[in-house]
Length: 80
Image 1 (cartoon, rainbow, N blue to C red):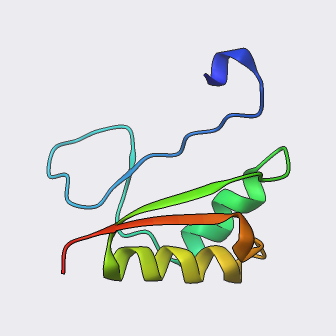
Image 2 (image 1 turned 90 degrees about the horizontal axis):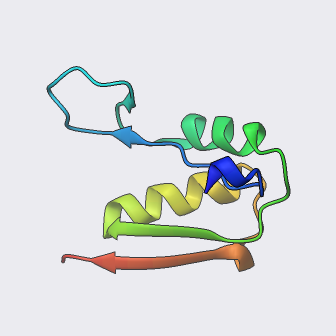
């Protein structure tokens, strides 16, 4: 999708990967989200956050703290 230069951007981070890889490693936090948002070349139209309840809460709060309108954020939660 990124090859079409239509504004699509994918940033991968692996939180528990023990093997060497080219992706970012570590937990997603407000600082990481702020960096992703500031690197965007086009205005955001949608934000999808999917994961466990604690992950979704942290990611949504970080996204809002980075200045993204909460109306653009959709979440999907799983687990207890």
